[in-house]
Image 1 (tube, rainbow, N blue to C red):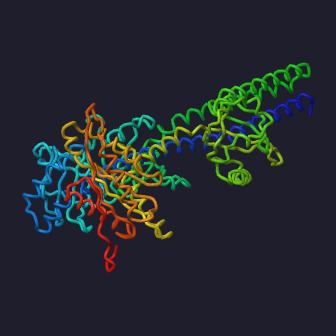
Image 2 (cartoon, helix red, strand yellow; image 1 turned 90 degrees about the horizontal axis):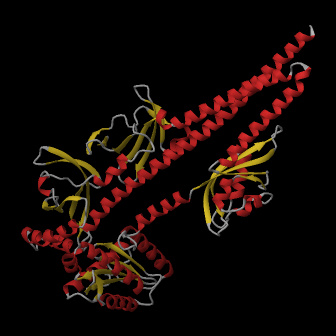
Image 3 (cartoon, rainbow, N blue to C red; image 1 turned 30 degrees about the horizontal axis):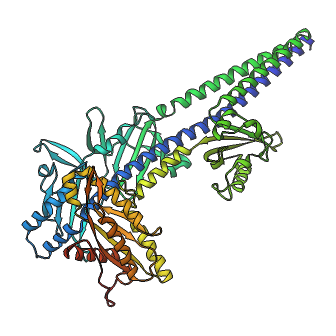
Length: 628
């Protein structure tokens, strides 16, 4: 074999080896990148679907809570109980109940109609702007439903959110039901704001039991009930992510889709989002294609450079210079990506000592990244907020999977704490030894603030900021458990404002809302720090006291509240005087369950109302031969 042939063989072998290596590197680099970006994209979509699902669930809960508040008006419920017992006629019941329920209905902006039924389901009265246009039969359901009813003299049908709540008498028995119909306007924003998913996205609100869905036409602004259709038909759970309610699959027309399902717990409905995979991952495919093309171009360039390097001896130095120059270009490109990335990136050794940090890290923690080089990244972790076993868990996952992702709290230079979604990737040498850790951070403080805001809306009254009915029910159950364990007493005070309706009627609902806020402030200032005061709805409040030395302590608290609310309020530059009537039930004297205590306090309040208002009364002690 001649020297020329040997040289040609060597050049060919080296070039083929370089091309093959480049191909392997391109595939090895692109597949994890594609998977990681795809997973992040899917997680982002799932988080958006979950947030929208929480919004749907909150609206349904709001509708149900409004119905329960209307049904819980004690005076109107008492009159309905008298009707059921045969003590008043239907006409007397309607004359008494209609104006009071109309007043409550006027405060509900999206309520279209309200029907009050007796305990046998017979209609007693109907109120609201569309009450007379509804059919004669409107059924009671134990959950929130969306139904179609004819309007405009029966020529057209519209969808309504329908919910109902039982009306309880003084002894806790059901004496009737309130059925409320709400407009669908509150749900429209949840059907149309899908810019982040694309115009081809389909949103479905599915009734699981009846196999139907609510559809919305943005062009006409009309809701309709339709069969389930292809919301999730033909789609299978996406592998290991099935627990996150993520689905992928191909429909009958051959189009592949990505879908998200969020069940509205307790409502019997599912919220589903369905979008073509080509639209959902369009940006991802474009970015990965660009990376692959760049790697292929670099691979071909490397082969060409190698062939030039193995050329004539006179060109060896030139070939080496070109190789070094190309390597420098590659390093500059990598450094540019590192420095200009909006994400915070830190490179540490295996023990967490910082080797290099990019400007994104500096901006996120408001620190001098240069001073952190040589220091431990652990010094910036806020372990008071992070999990106790955080480092042990990270080390264990790095050893098994070469990667870890989770939430970590960091200390900023100004003393504040910052939550971050952190991804750690391991870098190993050819022998498999861990030599570097790549840390990528994303600030998730805005997301956590949004979650806290949603949590507050679920537990506090939006008008007064006081605990709402569900929160009060939980606090009362906790107080009973505490009192039973320690053998102490506490009291439940049922408060109903006196002369509130005249103020509301004469000055308007806005002034009434302002007055309720001021009442809430005075109530907070009138009780002890460990007493719990909340709003049940309308002008009714509930106070759960801390431990009492005796029942008389509850009377002292009630006197203080009565004196506080007797003082005039300034509303719309007018001095307004109201009062309060209070019913008191003491645990365990007047009951040992939440329902028994509230009912006892309500009965005592009823006694105060009948006796002239403006004072308090204790409930009758529980009969030792009956259940509390």
